[in-house]
Image 1 (cartoon, helix red, strand yellow):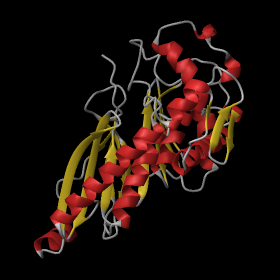
Image 2 (cartoon, rainbow, N blue to C red):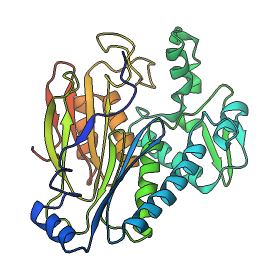
Image 3 (cartoon, rainbow, N blue to C red):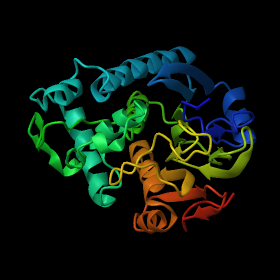
Image 4 (cartoon, helix red, strand yellow):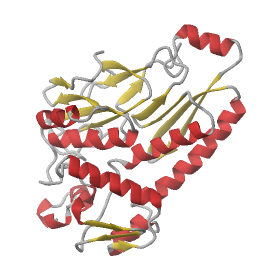
Length: 326
C-alpha cells in the first residue's frame, strides 16, 4: 500500500534529551523545577503534528499550544485548495479572486520565487497534471500552457490566472509555511525551546541547548532502518521521497511530477533539506527530487543557509558540502 504520510524523519533523541539539550543540562533544568517538558500531538493537514516545549508552567504551555493549533488551522483553510469556499478555492474555480489576504499573497510570492530559482522545476500550477495522474488518465489531456507559475498575476489583493484551465496546489510548501507560523506563535508567546514537527517537516528552536536535536533519517527502501543521523540547532528539515505516495511497485510513478514534462522524476528516491525555514526546506526538497543529483546539488551550493542529502534509486548517497556528517 502507498505510504500517504511523510514520516521520513524520525526524532531519535526525545529520551534523555529535550529539544537537543544534553542529559545533564536537561536534568538540571527539570529537577530544579525551572522548566517542564510539555509534549502534545494533534492531527492537522492530513498528518500527525508533534509539539514539544520546555516551559516554566505546564498550563501556560498547553494554552499556548491550543492557541497555536487554532491559528495553524486558520492558515490551513487559506492554503488548502480543497476548501472550495476559500480564496484559493475560488481562484481555482473561476480563475480570479479579489479576496486574497496577506498570508495567501505571501505564500504565492514565495512559490513564484522558488519557480524562478529552479527554472520551473518547482511550480504550484502543476495541479492539472496531478489531477490527471490521480485519475490514471493520459498526461496528454493536460494543456501544458496551463502549467506555468509565471502566469499567476498578483495585484494587491487580487490574484488571477493569465490562461483558462489553470489551477494551483500549495501542497509543496504550505505545510512548511504552517509549521513556521506555529513556531513563530509559540516564540511570540514567550516559548524559546520548542519543536514543531508535521509528518517529517520540522523546525527546532533551542535557546538553552548545549547540544542540538539529533535526527535520524530513515532509509527510503527499508522500513524502520536509519540511513543517517544528523544534528540540527535552530534549523528546519524537510524530506520528499518517491516512496511516500507511489502508484507502481517499482516507485517509477509517484506523487512528485516534473512540471516541465508531467512525468515522475526517475533519478532520486529521497531528498532531505536543511534550511532556515520549513517552507524553504519543504519547497526545496520537492525541487531536489525534480532536478536530480547534479543540478540539485548545484542549486543548494548556491544558497548560503541550506544543505541537502540525496538518495538515488540505486541507493547512492550525495551530500552537499554543508550537510552535517552523521
